[in-house]
Length: 219
Image (cartoon, rainbow, N blue to C red):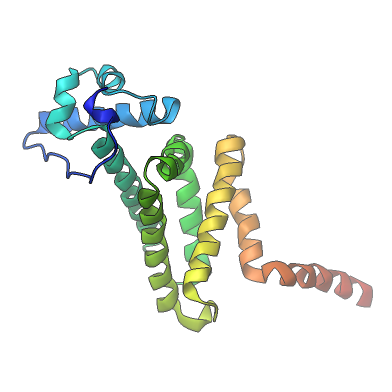
């Protein structure tokens, strides 16, 4: 049994390269890990598999990461960081909360389409170490809740944590359907449909549909 397949321990911070060559090598290792974890799953991937994909010697990986688990944890954190940074850039000039939600959702869906293994790798954390799974989504929910609280009651008077998880759930499962299952979906159209739901709510959708019909009858 190799070191990487032992029971996961506390994650160790990755080595910080001091040269451009070192950064490039580390990036290759991370990209190879993403490919191998995404295709094979965490437990079926070995350090040797990752080394082959990165075109480095297996021992080189241990210069940058303590073990396979540390590499996986780093990749998971990188996903969270990249998603947040991409969304922040997409909404940077927006002030309307609904416009922010639309731009944020579209940014997330586009990123997942570019990195299709994200779902596999993030959700597998539930079976690798449930604490990782909880931490990943709790961190997202906390940041989302803060944003909703800043928007105040103009958005909703609901419990902001409940609201954050509702919105995260919509993003996750819309992405699952229209990126993971249906890879050719028109993401702009899908997001517009989601925004119709956001604007009117489940009960309000029926009322919104009835209004034009009532106007036609009057005319």
